[in-house]
Image (cartoon, rainbow, N blue to C red):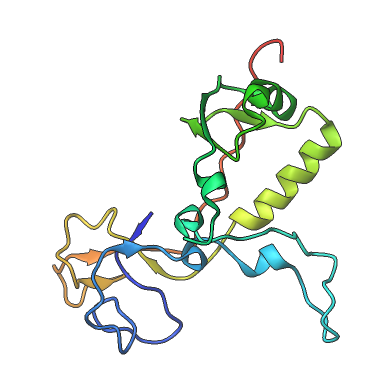
Amino acid sequence: MLCYCDFMWKEMRNCRVGGAETMRLPFDCPMDHVLNTPSFFGDFHKNGTEGRTALGVGVREPNFLLNPRVPAAVRESVAKAALGKGLNDAQISQALAPHAAASIIEIDDVVGTFCGFADGAANREFAERTKQMLTYKRTPFCMMEGSDNAPLFSQCCSPRKPGDKFFPCIHGFDDPDPLPACAAGR
């Protein structure tokens, strides 16, 4: 996902935070621009222990497999797989079983593949936790989409003067779409 404007809790100049005026736009969005990352790690008490809202989600940088510290045996152990649509966790595990020895499995076109967990309790917990992680009401976030081709460095949220084009703002992101329906007979 590309960001066309940085996000900061203070004023920005030309969609960039102070000191980053020469930063190239667009740029790869940092995770905290689009996800509520504090919710991943939970609520910490003053004594340093995690509270009940902890989601316990591990985080890695998006290009971690390119890191030179990743062993060659891992980088070179790659299997490619294509999966059907509307599969639950057990069906996906079964479909990927022939690739169990691979360190990395690249799955082609995952959109619409996972429909939930076969176990109802696990599915409800997954739905609750992913909604917590993926729902992010952030105000405002400057977007190129819907700008009617506003030139770079246009104002965010409203025009500078009547008739100027501007980048519209959204207040966070919509709730995540529900999972696709499981395929018939699954």
